[in-house]
Image 1 (cartoon, one colour):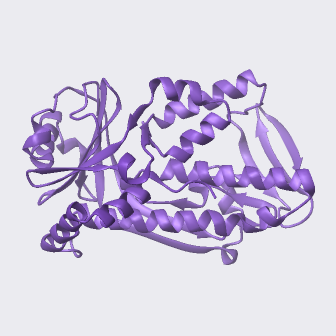
Image 2 (cartoon, helix red, strand yellow):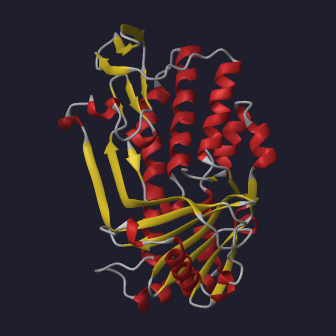
Image 3 (cartoon, one colour):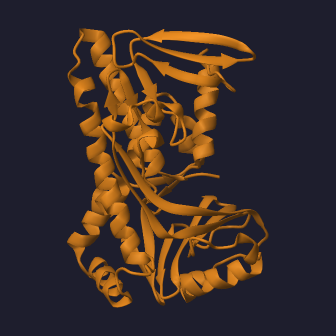
Length: 346
């Protein structure tokens, strides 16, 4: 189970592609989020502050909509391709080779969109000296569980506690997703469901804890918290997009949304090229995409520093000051809300 918070821009792109029916019917529109500091629960009204909201709709549901639409529109999607290799993307005649079912294949193309994730072949095909890599692994991880019980709240709750961060999220009105900060070398076997629920109640505080419904986990995992960025995102006729080029900390729910923004901007650039021969939008793609990524990375880092315990980092007193300023300052809340809901595509 992957990301589940869609920015308005992502929902708008889905609608523009004719994929908006199910997300409109089944997605949970959230006009606000909640933060806790000790016993206090504070709501940030995203809708009032920005005129926008976010939608809870799982990444696996987005993928289902995409695959269903591809099948309906007779768009070929090839599975289990191996030995994928990119060729001559720095020249005028790019092509891709791959094997499938024991047969070799070649695709000649004008451009290659490298949307194949962090471990894909696209970024690894770029000479190392042509990439500027920026990365950071944070000194903690997230322990998460998925459980078929009603959520603790009808909106997300982000908790900053003396013992560490916690998040109450959901995938549907009957399926909940919870996370807690844990050590980077945490042993998942040491976390029984009962221990997780007890610790979660403590970190979320009494208001949220009163509404937690316990149940057996259907998935339990530990994920590292890190950021990664490869610049630039264009290399000749190869364009990197999504996790192939960047990863941001998960707290801001930006990963999937940044990937959608990348491909929306890139698609518009291709349309401009094929309609009038202009490469202007293609030439500006990398910087436009990276500007959004950098902003999301800064927001996610700041959000981490307000809510997580760092072995060497912001003191608990400093965290309280930052959170209280957010609670008390309308301008601070407005800026936070704008960053959280994401900027429209420009």
